[in-house]
Length: 388
Image 1 (cartoon, rainbow, N blue to C red):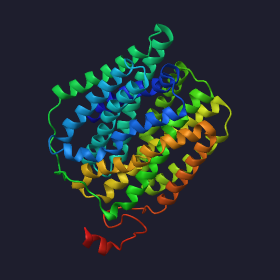
Image 2: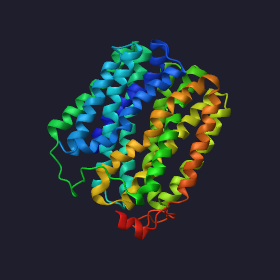
Image 3: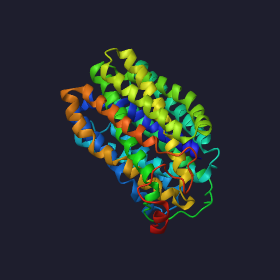
Image 4: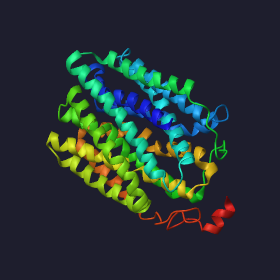
């Protein structure tokens, strides 16, 4: 069920992702400032992901996950019918609502259902399944755009309807799976989780540069067309499908500490290269490397799985997504304005953000566990336990 949910979410998101920058620039007429506004709107549901814990009072996580899949499908299907700024903002908000609540629930369910010893490799397999779905979406877009000459409206509609169909199949064919541990239905903030919160915050900040500005560079600076962007995304998805399971197994061998360190060192190098490259092919290769390092963030989740209480998985997933999107809500507009002045400055800021992540990764213990959450605690463990 988790694999099918991931496939539905990835197919709809891949459709939107392949087209939205060209749709924004070529049809709606967006520049850097409007792109910043669009992605701020897109990240508002992520910022409000903590509200998922309140929805769990009304429904099970499994039900919320399926409803989220139906929502992203609906939002993507509508996008092409509203080719003006406000319409694009509203359909993006609907799409993003489904995407972020699905991601919150999927993270929580995977941490509950997979054993700690094998969670990284199993989550890596789920990422691989999602990449297969992404490959299917990009391949179909490339074919329909190149040879059938379909326009934005019909491709958005098709991508959304595929996700909706999978969501309805999940609703009517899968049983309700029992929960091993009853999840707390209240917001959870714990002092001993502070390092996880900090790594999550930094991850959200640097993710925006990858999602928004790396793609905008391809389209605006190097002139990539819809077909060329789709081909790049397709190659990227194949690469992710191949490497994600290996990353999962690598986390099991290396541990979260070393994996998170490698992730941020690699990101610093990639962002610096973005800033200085003038070759469109090198930029495309950097984008694929960027996404590969992004896949290593599986280690962030499994780090929390090892230090967190079992009943905290669902509420903390919502809180973590909100923390992840604090920067996502506030970064796009100022960086969008900076982009119009000097696009390379955006990527140098990315180097700085990844550097902060590397510093934080030095505080992750080699063997994280409850009571061994970090190598440095602002509050002494005994006092922290008493306070909780």
